[in-house]
Length: 372
Image (tube, rainbow, N blue to C red; front, side, top):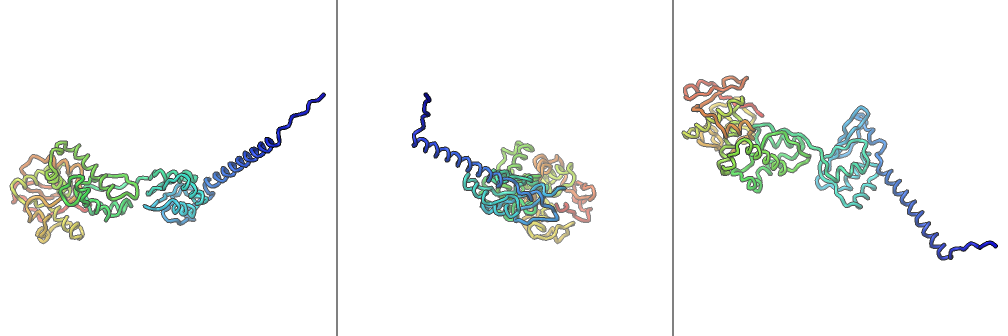
């Protein structure tokens, strides 16, 4: 006698049917979403196909090329630019397939792109591009601030390098808050920003640039002259002024300390410093005239507080950004009784040091250090 198979109640069969349909639907939906994700995330076919002969314009993008076409792209995100605006630019340039996937990701994770400049190696998925911009993995740009340049000239170098605007840098270097932060007695950070090769993101705020250079300056001071920590801001400022003048006067390193000794000797006897470099500073940075090769009587008679030919003592502030050699010379001047020096070999940069005015006036011209 055969046993009859027991059947599930109709209600359970209906329930299992619904569950099966839901699972199948979920699987199909998951497969669809996965397929859509893979499609949208995959680099467009033409992403790495750009070539110099077939350029594509998109604001804030710059392609770098190899033998087979574009190998990377520089993506610039402006301050305050939205993720949606960036996505639209990337779509127009053919770097992503669709901005809608980009926008959906922005809504889902709530992350924002960060201002800066980024290098993206191609081909790159949309997730790779987004990750770089959201995490802020900026590229750094090398910029060299030479020894002896003035604050104004440093600002132009930074602007030309695309780091920050010249006006923004000058404003930051003149900020009362920053001057107070570093206990600077003057009106600007002239002299207190160390000349060196820096690696900055672009753009970088003027305040960040100034603080980076100031921190480097004070770190160098601690290396060169640990005793400087016991100086008052005014005392340190006086040494920095001497260093800034020496920086603009010396050409051969072994003469820097001797020159510093000369200036300190002049101060001791209340003799004017008579630095050509201070007059050159008036002509170029204050009056905005071309850099002079020689100085004449009409130049050294300029009525100005920075003219150390007619105003005794130190000028109101530093006249350049001194480097390690000049700073070391100002802190450790040569032990000498010289009161004068003059350039005798322009090619070699050698000076003649003397104790008397009679020896000094043999010079027919007063040379100034070349424009940095």
